[in-house]
Length: 178
Image (cartoon, rainbow, N blue to C red; front, side, top):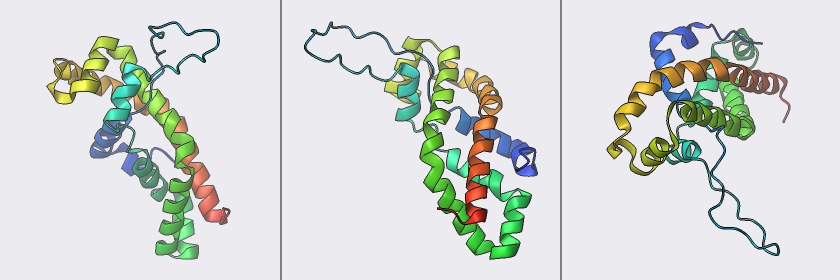
């Protein structure tokens, strides 16, 4: 329904923003097993987030998804047609509302993908240190060195998810369905 090769997606600045935002989403790695055994009568404690998930959540790395979806959607011919039919302000308002409404269905997968990519490139101790200490971590420089790789991988891996989000938002905003 839209072209992800639109000028906003392809520009160097946009690519950098996308890479940074993409570097900030969910995890695929399995959390460590619980250190204590549970009794048969007590339910097992839910495992905590993996170190990569903790890093992504603590620093809100997946927060750029809404703006990426909005920017991608506004660059489509579908949005242009909506703006011609409904007026630019109303089309914009409907698009923003739809993205906000459906975003939770996509956000967790976005963050999971991002965390899984960080888990591929950084060890659990590195991720734990980064989650706890941020830029003060002794692994901050290592984090910076893997960011471009993670960004490129995230852009490739998340494109279908972003396309699905934008397509759903545009379809619902254009059709007026709630």
